[in-house]
Length: 294
Image 1 (cartoon, helix red, strand yellow):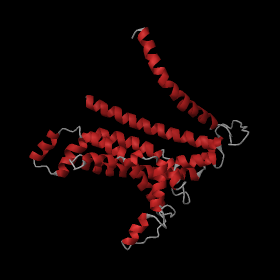
Image 2 (tube, helix red, strand yellow):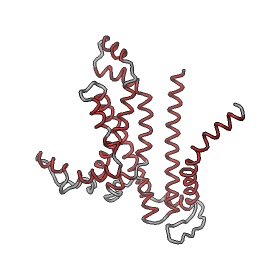
Image 3 (cartoon, one colour):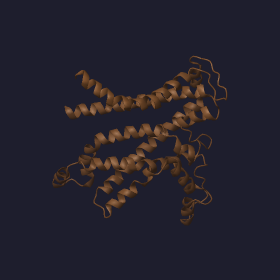
Image 4 (tube, one colour):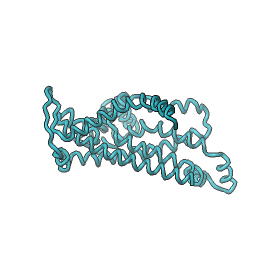
């Protein structure tokens, strides 16, 4: 590439890199540096370097590692259920329904709503006193006094259900696009060979969707593990820490307990975990690309 072409390429790339440097790289560098200090959120900040003390304290912080366990349960549950529900909905939307356009628009409604609005709406649905969910259960003769977000046994499943509802449209659209790329001749050939609906699904549809399923599942897991706003508005980590996700725990440590240095160390741990997950995702993508090229 000639020097003039390189200058032109740099002129096009640099403007897009500046926001990344200012809004992503710089805050990350500041956060990592704070992890090695005793910084606190006070009016007149004055902090000293403490080396690895914050990370040593983290090793004995059972609550933080407990939030990791809850975060993994949340991320795995929401990701798997999103995939299963989105697969069913994508297959339904790809089957030639009447009013298909309207159905697809309605399927995207949860995705179009801000997370805070979704959380407030579901708080009303889950309300133990006037919520429509308990009212419907009462009409069926079932117990109608469950405190869905305030009971230790139901809080996490209730929040997981909301997470699935919110993320399902994005996964559905992705899978639907993949379904429409599978040649219809493959299904016709399988039918002529006597394959039923299930055999066509496992023998034609799933192999055709495998790269898409790998990609969307990996990204969904990372996004779900990093969840914050939805759970914060729904439960603020309660009751008794039953829905305390790692990102929420770190936020509360910084802004409620004002231990910015300790919270920054938690953030560094979370960044390392996310980078490892991204590495696994990129490795799987490169492996799939290599298999397709080979």
